Amino acid sequence: MPEPATVHVNGEARDAAGRSVAELVVDLGLPGDGRGVAVAIAGEVVPRGTWPSRTLVAGEHVEVLVAMQGG
Image 1 (cartoon, rainbow, N blue to C red):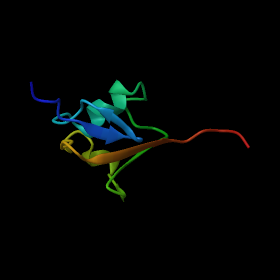
Image 2: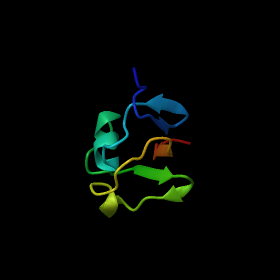
Image 3: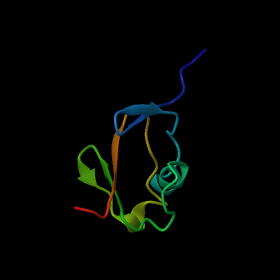
């Protein structure tokens, strides 16, 4: 049986290949409008306006960062 097409999100393998960055953000329980969220793929920031059209590819390394208040 073939393994699912995985993407590494914040160091964890996820079956997310073929999904958009926007879908991934929502799947992670983060705001759909992307406020306070930044996404980088292979160390390059992905502009929020391209999230709906940027498809994740198996084997990619994605970092999702969330801004937090506090000090």
